[in-house]
Figure 1 (spheres, rainbow, N blue to C red):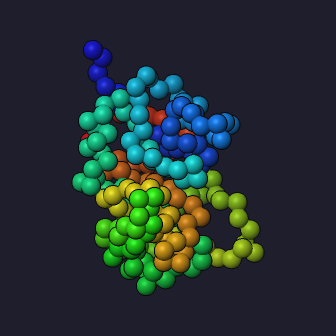
Figure 2 (cartoon, rainbow, N blue to C red):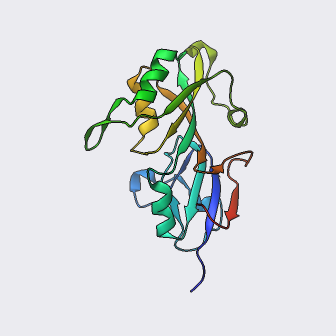
Length: 191
């Protein structure tokens, strides 16, 4: 039996975190297999929604996937929000907020949250097309140990600052770094 393989991908905005399109309403969507020739049995570890971008790990090993998705592994994001976020909202995010999930209301675990003084370098490569007439935006960094359905987007909306752009920059010890959008690196391990 061949050894398992692991991959580090900078998922561009506009791609689904899946390989097979089995929904007719998503007929013309871009899939991960459009970016690289992954071996059979490769699965994304966690997901980034179509509008999100950044670090996505993939593996052929279900045990590694389970370990990386555990609450032992931190996931860090840069988040561009609508409006000028304030310290009070950042403290609220860090303390945990209530969000609505398909299965009901959920209180997020405390997390790390901080304001960013400038646009992160990774965000400068493919800026969001938004006219200044729509008002100011700001950036924050959020580090979680959980990953519920669209959690970061729901968290920022719950404190009055909807997410405009979401970039995952770190999973555990693995950093996105300067890996260009759409590029894939094969890794010897992920944990």
